[in-house]
Image (cartoon, rainbow, N blue to C red; front, side, top):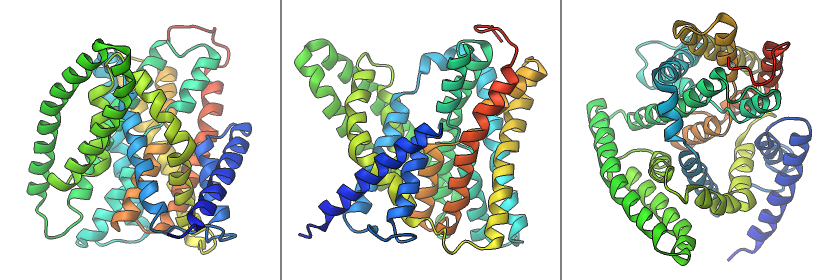
Length: 394
């Protein structure tokens, strides 16, 4: 056993938390700071730590836990409240950025439409743009007193559905990355997995509700049982059905999101994620980010990628919000509120690198896109709400 892993963990935790705190002070998501820490301590700058056979599986566990918590924090009751308007906004908020990202890659690198593998890589890059992170949007709306209004509720509901569609889309794209695999086979396997997940979901939900009702001692064991369900569904998704393991983890969270102890489970697991697995995952992305070798072409691509990321969300979500009878200004608020990207985009990017669908050089524009969208979104929202009374219902 090599004891350097303890040194590596100490360096990762110290730098990740220090840079995360600095990011928060600058009103930037802490994950951006943790990724930056990975760049600094990784091979690109100082080379204190490099990815190895221990850190790589630990980072994978971090991904699984992140997706499980994302599913666990999904509010199905909120989805029922916002209805079809949020669903339509989410659908177009996924497919317009998907088309925009795909087109940018094809046009920028002059990809032949006959090159199926490169087209698939272009589609995958488009998938990165589909994810929405509304954590910053929620904080801004809460500060200015508009979180519970029509616009805030619509954004929240659309973001939840947005992530579900994005994960299903990712599952399909990753499923056909092997040229020898038929797309029809991928569709069938994906459908079978979701049928399996629905059946097992009803059974597991019933069991967890019974456990929760039995006694406080059983309640304390529920986070352990839920974690076992998360890992089991991740394994089943990947090995039995050929579906991405993160999809299984996300579905496990969805299964448990409305039980009484969902918040208790999330709080218990969040400790592990915050203290260890999260920092390892986000710094590992920094390890793979090739900033030192970035070319002028990649700088230009990064700028265009950011522009496409912002405009496609505003157009995709805002135009549908207008069709759903929101005012032009409120429609723009919805589009801007859905513009921010975060952890899910990073998870998709990481999965792309692991499967060979994404070159590590593209991690740089993705990280820059997440950073700048996190800065632009709150500024734009506050400008759009300027002059309006707190607690207005729009």
